[in-house]
Image (cartoon, rainbow, N blue to C red; front, side, top):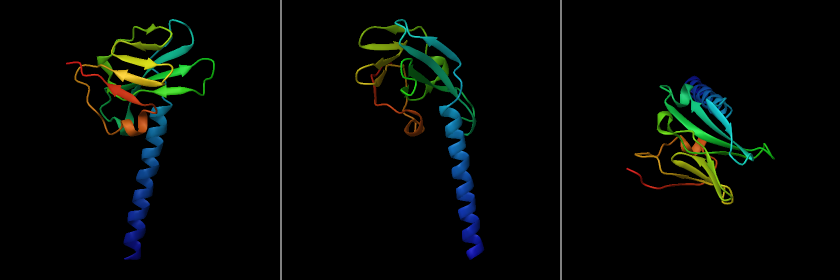
Length: 136
């Protein structure tokens, strides 16, 4: 009985470590697209998620980095990689790309991606509040 409990605990610990490693890899992954925002204060990056968290790939998140304080990093919820056009726009209140806006004051995202669906992985990926505006 003790060996069975030890085996189960060891397996759970190994799975937790593997999940943590995969999550860390996703959060620190290099972007597929990176550009300076039109006003120059932020980096706008599209980051693909691969590995254990997305075995088939095909999902990404938007990472906004404050260029004056690189510790301020904001991650959007996941979206289908091909659903977002990375043409950037910015004004005094917000910045973003097609279908995704980031409110600089409230530090939250608004998504209007057609047929966007919630994903359980957003609990781990997105570090900001977000709202979804139905679009399609």
